[in-house]
Each structure stands twice: as C-alpha cells, then as structure tokens.
Length: 236
Image (cartoon, rainbow, N blue to C red):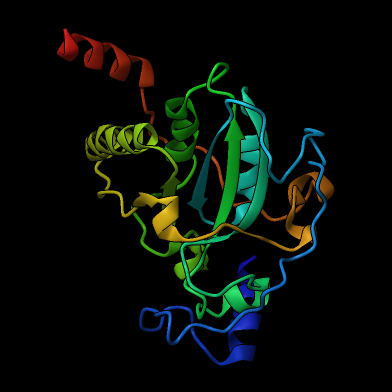
C-alpha cells in the first residue's frame, strides 16, 4: 500500500511522520461506523460481537492490515478476524484519514480466538515472527505511525503473555544481531475502541489473492514451548 499511502498523504498535505497527534489535534471523524460485512469471507463466522461464550479477544498491529489479517485467520483456534483502526483518537476514521497520520491510529487486526483450541502465546508467536518489531512506525517501504507494531490486550493474562513473549523475543533478536522491539503494549481499554475499516479492506487478500503483502518470516523463532517449560520450572 506504500504508493497509495504516499498519494493520500500528499493530497492531505500532512506527512504521517509529523509530531505526535493529540485528542485536540486529531481529525474529527464521524459518529457513524464504517459499513462492513458481518460474516467473515473466509471463516464464515461473525465479524462483530456478541462473540461465542468463552472466546477471547485481542487487537494486533504489525504494519499493513491486509497481510496481518491473513496471518491470523489461518491460525488454528481463531474464530474470526477483522481489519480496523485502533490506538488513536479519531472516531470511525476512513482509510484515507488514517494514512495522513492525523488520527493517531494504527492499522490493526481484531483477533477472536477459542482459548480451548489455541493460546495467546501461539497467536503472538505468529505476531513476533512475521514482521519487524524493531522498526518504529515502519514495515519495509510502508512508513508512518499507522504502521507501528502494537499489542492491545483485553485481560491481565494476555498482558503477561505479551510482556513475556516480548522479553523472550528480545533475546532472540539480540542473538541475531537485531535491535530491540519498539512494540507498543497496552490495554485495549487504554488504546480506545477498535474501529472497523471499510468493507473492501476486510479479508482483502482473500478477495484479491495477488494483492500487496509485505509480511513473512523475519528469520527469528520464538520457542513458546521452551518458554512454557521454563515458566513451569520457575513456579515449582
């Protein structure tokens, strides 16, 4: 999406690497949510609440949400996913507004999963291994605050897993001569609402199999099984 982002940013005359946006300086947005399909185009499951009993929810940002969403809808135990915007101030922003950097939002994917079929650690393994968390506000040629790396958790247990996997992956990155993660980790309540993106962004790479995607293995592996063993040993 880098060519489109550049065009939109130029059109709005607001570079997305400018000073941090505040609630007072953010674009005003609108009260109406973006229309979007309520059934996942791949999984056939609802993309909006209410969620199944026992389901857990988190929002993850790791660059362009087209490729991000596909990574997570392919994981076992994931009930549904949706592309959207979170972490900023503008209510119900458009994609064009987010590309200006004047909303404060990151391109984010909502992930709803069954904790009896998978774990948050397994989901974050895919998160850490498939983007570069060391580059602030950038993934490859996609540059801007909307491309930042972020984990927005909804439970204390998720927070602990996010911090533990970050620390473990930091060590892996160091072994490979890489920098430290810049990933933003905070509660979804603090990050603010998840705003659904326009319908054409939902399950984009299913609808457009040859579409743009800059996600893939970053060459570093997070061993969540080893983490579990070490944590169990420490608790004995």
